[in-house]
Image 1 (cartoon, rainbow, N blue to C red):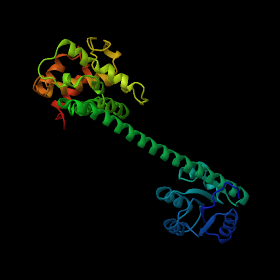
Image 2: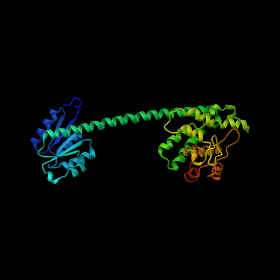
Image 3: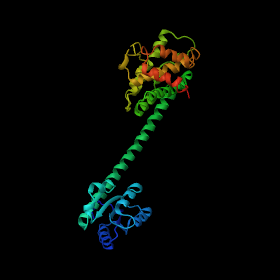
Image 4: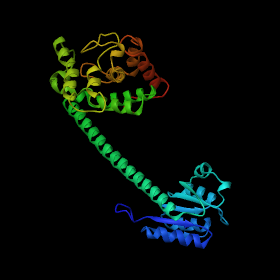
Length: 338
């Protein structure tokens, strides 16, 4: 037995000839593997119902349930590889037998040495597959933990902004939810929607550098104060740019006040120069801002918000994004904060 070979292997030998069962079992046992025998397919299924079997070595021509029928049953119910044997090689082809679910196909009389070589190969392949599946499962678990940590960090950053600005408490959450709904309506991929959700959760993170008295100031703000507020996109970008996100989060945050005609800020980008996710955030941000209460004015309602984006469809806002947003409210019954 190979030094690296697994010893917790169970092989089931199925044949209606006792001499063949005995010879194959002896060879399998000599390799250090557990081996059980069965005289036909029915008895084999009884063993499989009670014991985890790695490889089944079966004859085809047997009473009650033949080897092809057994192979089909194993493929449907169990995680076992199957080596099929037959003395009637002219009646079957390798392709047909494998198509029924067999891992290998051999002609009788069996060359025991060759059978054991094939058994080792199948067991090695099973072990490699099991190791790969385990590695993939561990990687998936690690990615889930990393994703959860990232989401918790984004949530904490978002709540930091809202603690300084009570009037926009919940703004980032509502914008994020609406933006993701719009993205779904536009058939963006799940990965794109995930990136948009992260960006939405911190799109106003730069406001932590804006004096709180300006953010919560009732009534009109001065031109100078508005210039200070406009710096929040660059500040947000500066905070996020060195974090290695899997999506361009910092750039989405920087661009969410850009406009299709180039009248936005901070860089005056136009049309497709603006990331699609940022165009979606822009519409969601405007709709939420108009529909909700602000220190300097009462809430103006969703109808007014939708009128704004429709009136400036293709001018300030991406027409596809506007259309998707309007459908959500008019046809899908979406409500802010729902």
